[in-house]
Length: 433
Ligand SMILES: *Cc1c(COP(=O)(O)O)cnc(C)c1O
Image (cartoon, rainbow, N blue to C red; front, side):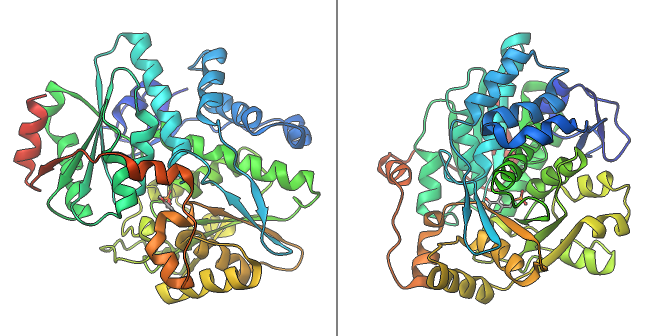
């Protein structure tokens, strides 16, 4: 299948080109030329299938033309070796727990899938080694680094702002070694992102090295995020509750929710979506006014959603032919302050004994406020609450249990390189590789 750019000024790309390049040459995002609907028979029997079986059917619609069936199946099954359970919180609200993977956040799904797909292309073509650059404010770096750990032919450079990620997050990408290098930048997350962007645009560097991005702009990380929407539907169908499904997604760069909208386009019976924002409510404002006004992000306690110019907005627009009316027919929005997020975490724990993380709390609250009679709501619980230990413990006023997987990371030895935020330093470092 071919991929076009949302800016429509770049030539079509093959899947391999789209994955290896990340971003189109006109700076647009890649989109598949067709989004294939899945047959009615699939939806009729979906409740009898496992997560891996469902994901393979979805993956086949996206990648089946380009990847041999046995290899695609292996990539999907190997990526999804953990469960994504649907947990009932209230009569009509369910949590889709996406945090049972290695780094306890939903980005594990896309990170692992992309690593395996890129690894396949490199091996098949005898292509030269690929360097993955990823700027992180915490969660992306750990999911991408753990996904790519030990994959031959790929080296990952994680750029993170000094002193601005939590200790748990830092340990998840600085203790791995092998093909993972952590670069501690004396600057902010925006400085890290600017370094990565400058590197992609630097002609000399790109002649010297094959560089790609593992942020959700990359189709190999973005599209697999559709898998679990289908599995959520299957689990509800099994319970006889899938008729009026509303899905709510805590959103920052809008990769996760856009993958869900792709699912709907493939025939998945979701009545409507809700995008839950923290105070970085650029998309919410767009829904109200039709005007898209990016602005600098502000820091909140749901920090993985602190995005002032969501990169996948271009894909949402493209999917709906830039029609505000069509977008608002499928998607509504909400926006919450830190105080509202704190109240929601606390109340949900006290009333329902369900512990939300600050991101999932936005999703839960949007359903609690917005579900209509007869509707069943599923929110995506995007990370384990223990990943935000200090915040969550302060809200509850009690200790939170830390899963063994996180404790293991804490034992590792931190290894990193320190660097200034000057592009010249970063470039010299890369040129010397
Ligand atoms: C990345 C992230 C989000 C936002 O996802 P997008 O695809 O960027 O919208 C939400 N919650 C958590 C915990 C995240 O790590």
